[in-house]
Amino acid sequence: MYNNPALYDACTAHKIDDIPFYENWVNDNGTILELACGTGRIAKHLIESGFNYTGLDLSSVFIDHCRSKFPNGKFTTGDMCDFNLGKKFDLIFIPFNSFLHLYKEEEMTQCLKSIQNHLSDNGKFLLDIFVPDPEFLYRDPDKKYEEMTIIHPNGGECTVWQKNQYKEETEINHIHWFFNRGNSKPMDEYDFDMRMIYPDTMDRVLSDSDFTIEEKWGDYDGEPFNETSLLQLYICSKRS
Ligand SMILES: C[S@@+](CC[C@H](N)C(=O)[O-])C[C@H]1O[C@@H](n2cnc3c(N)ncnc32)[C@H](O)[C@@H]1O
Image (tube, rainbow, N blue to C red; front, top):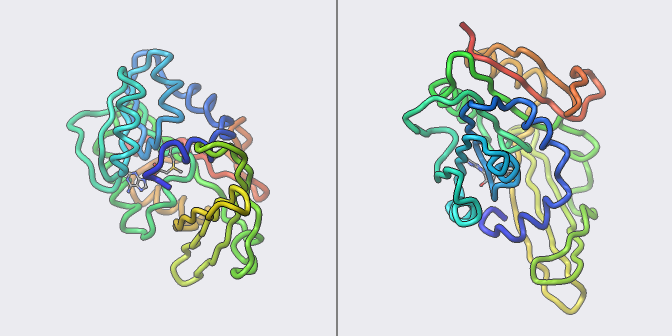
């Protein structure tokens, strides 16, 4: 999935509800670093508004795609667990569940340490992950569930089906997507994993990594996080 920019864009075309959230936290003259920037879904809005934006992603295919699409942005290939850009940023964020691609707590801690090293003293760190949903995690692992319909980059409508298997011992959800473009065409299939991070764990890992959780929202409109929230949206600063 993360080597096919056109397919990734087709699958995330619906995702626009988080853009105002990030626009709200940028300062006119501040420097911005997005970790796991993907194909530039959010970068597009920030660069077009003239902000000083840098994006980092593990996928060199995605980074090459961003470089050719957004000549005014700065993009670098790298691992968010271990990077050194040699400068500080006023706003660092990890959007759209990308942090769930860090499968072990040590990786999360390493990532947060690298963020500490790159965040200016008065800077903000924003993190967006979903709340694990038992109804999704404990579905029948042998059954395919319809996930969404997209316009496939090669043309036509395509139904995306999903299977998943959650392993409690690792807290990792193993996900398999099937792209069905009609019965006459072979289905493309993709595997990816997501670490489920429960609210108490995320609070603890951030706090142990010397972040102050200034606010925790349950949606992009600023509703404080509560037991019915679907999202965990953290607004953090460096602990002084
Ligand atoms: C769900 S996509 C989000 C992309 C983009 N930020 C967006 O909101 O559309 C997850 C991204 O995380 C990237 N990624 C996964 N592990 C990473 C790591 N260790 N360091 C940097 N990027 C990583 C993937 O290459 C992919 O682009």
